[in-house]
Image (tube, rainbow, N blue to C red):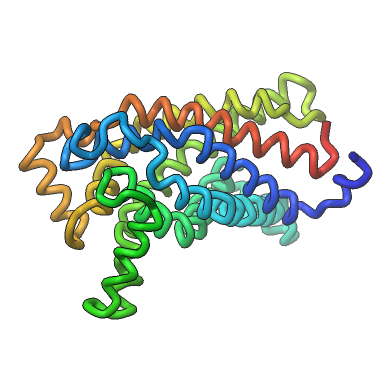
Length: 292
């Protein structure tokens, strides 16, 4: 197998490994994501479904997981590689200027991960809108939620439907970029530390990557929970409203504690998700590039 997989290009490896990782984590941990969404819903946990139908909306997750994760990792690995080349002096004597400016490897990870998230949100946001409306029991399934949105075309037009599918785009970007800017430098930093401990020549294993991904994800999840609450409320609202309006409404109606709604399930879900997602990605990437 190694002779076959070692011929895979980094682009293909990132594409396929990302698709496998995204599908694996979203399906395996979907019930926890549903409970988190219902805890954050303005209607309340039990009116939004409680513990019933915890796989509601899973169809949307299945459709969006692979392309979203694949798009992220293709962008992330490609841009990270390009930034590393520039930082290491591909531009000749420019390396001195780069080093004097304090551009560290962590900057590569922050920039590459942030751009990757913006790219992935092109797929993630529409599937998230449909998924969360089914999770919060606004519709019996993701297909029903999608049909409801599309049925509004006669009233709000094609552009209106497009805007409805991308409702919460801005706040999702605002949530995802800080989250990724925290998680991926931590993950990459722990992997680099492990390589130094083992002599620097050996790639980390899938298990090690999963453990590091879990720790990095837990930290990032806790710090960005308020943004996640705001994003969920905007996507579930009956009518479109700005982030500022949603923030004011949550603060007025429920107080500051509401911005920590779902904190426990979110940390648990993303910690477990980080282990599965980044562990699976490392396993698939190592296998496809012939690394043992």
